[in-house]
Length: 505
Image 1: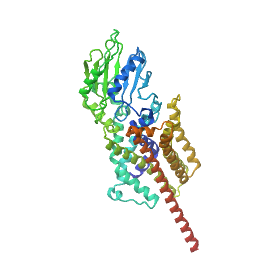
Image 2: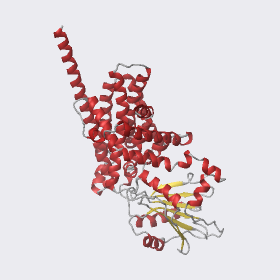
Image 3: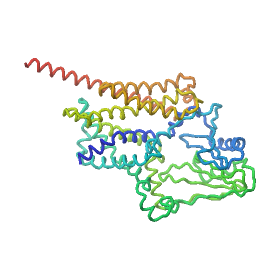
């Protein structure tokens, strides 16, 4: 069990670290979206945005086969319109922001980048979800074998020896492992369960001609669809009566996340409203209205039990049901899980170094720890910095931000070769702190002065992300100082021991 715990964790520790770090940031993907598009600091309320969106679409999207209004959520109000001309797919249409300022929001990968990266690794077409599925399964093995390895829960939990760096890391690894057992189990199991059809497709393919898609359609709530009649009609002008009906059904604030208007220039045109969900099931509720008469045509029914189970697993994994306090707890547990993975890989290497075991495998793991564990935070900081430094209306900003992320990470691969471990971690943590601290400084004194605008508008979302960035930088500096002190202490002890040996001789 100890052997299995050690090597199952070690061989995929760098992949698991990347998945858990970006997955942890995904809990605040909406807030990061707001931070990465500071031009949207002044957003209007939904009841004001929707009529404005309809009016803008009437002007900009004439002849379109479908209109879309993205309102986001209370945490990240999008205020964005999209439209598709006949023959265009969902990804081929045009979009425009409805920001209350004249400046259009910058193009950016946004907080959704961390969501997509943590389960696809930007390898969606190359088996990225299979790779992360293997990682989740391996993490489950690590959880169960870790329970056997650290079976003295209470003794390990109250033991923390800060004076010695190695013992402090061993104790921290044990304590974090105990605290995060339920979190890691739920996260990894739910990740595998809602992708069950991807990892184990044989049963659905055997019983259904079209596989899981046909099975899913049988247990999912039936949607609404109506073809165009061919009779021309003018798009809706006054949407207020329909909004009043929606408000009577969904009374909570910011209840609408998305509006789709099908066949706006046809007599059979209809509007479909999607609800912002805050419960565990993550079921997408909809209300469908006839565009001409305003009549309610369809309302989503409750899903059958198999589909509801799938929704619950997805809801558990994403944590969108969580209140602000619970989301923060989940974020901390995700950060601790990332630290658990990192300390495990470093402890394995330190154990080999103390035993004077040096071969190509230990050298490779030493380089991997420095490059992959230390490089990912630098890559994230470079991505955020690129979001601020690149010109707002530069073409290809999305691709350049991605290049900044992988470029910063890749630079650490080279630095890991140039520096020994002690020097590398000192430089890495200092560089990380400098990069992160430069972000609020740019927002404070830069041309946009976004931090001042956020304070004036009372935008707690933007301010909260800034506080998180500064806190991360300070933690990097504290860790750097702690490592420096421990190294100085160990060196002084080595000198004293050497002097004693010389005196004895």
